[in-house]
Length: 341
Image 1: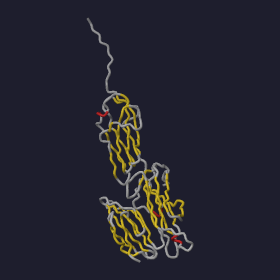
Image 2: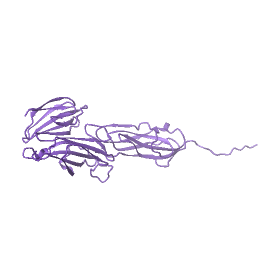
Image 3: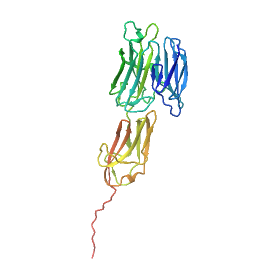
Image 4: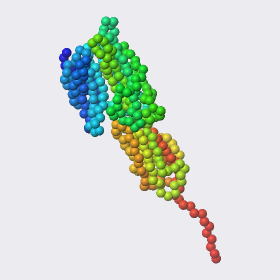
């Protein structure tokens, strides 16, 4: 069989599509070609876009292509997509969508929805057509990273398989999920991944194999606290030193402490406390502890004030916590003036 041409915009391996990889600083992309049934494999380093010939011909039993990206420090490998090419193997493509546009690995928050597009083509319907050409199986796996886990070096064979479905018609199907099914007692704090895979059917020539797959990472909802200032406290002199504790900040977020006059109100734009702004642009959730002091100039009027922690993510703005207190720095002296004549 002739050597297969694969392209990377998006990466198309013969009649098979892979998601495009990104190459930020510190990452290397490669495609792994695995022959069936021999198991012979070949790795080829690739750029994020371009095209080249596959190094090995496609065997009669089919060839699987895997798209990997490797982070240099710390050394971590991510499997982004897979594709199976064979004589009677249908073509499938899995694409996951969330409110966060980050790629190459889709991600979202534990309290947010996501959807999955499953596109299948090349299915045949004749009674004499090979079994492998008449249908595919859709599998959904969920796997928790555990408390504080990052997903690095996890054993995906330990993932939980949810009810699977058979697909026997060409076309695109969209599956929508209001929330993740990753297990965990506190639903706001689960972290892990959901994986959607399309597998071919086994026949005399082609083994059961993964045709396409993609996973989405689920990260916990952030929380925070303010210590050093209590509800209803009366401030007569300098503002106290405050400790800001932030847990599980979303990988793409801007978090800050603000203050405004009056009782707590959602959606208010207040005065940002100096030294409280924390911009997170990472692949993992972040936790931080900040100390705020020398911010008296923010409170330039007497009366009731509210201080709150706000975090802004691709999902909108959320208030993590708040505290209301009173400022009364004017000293009033009540006295009587008398004279002796």
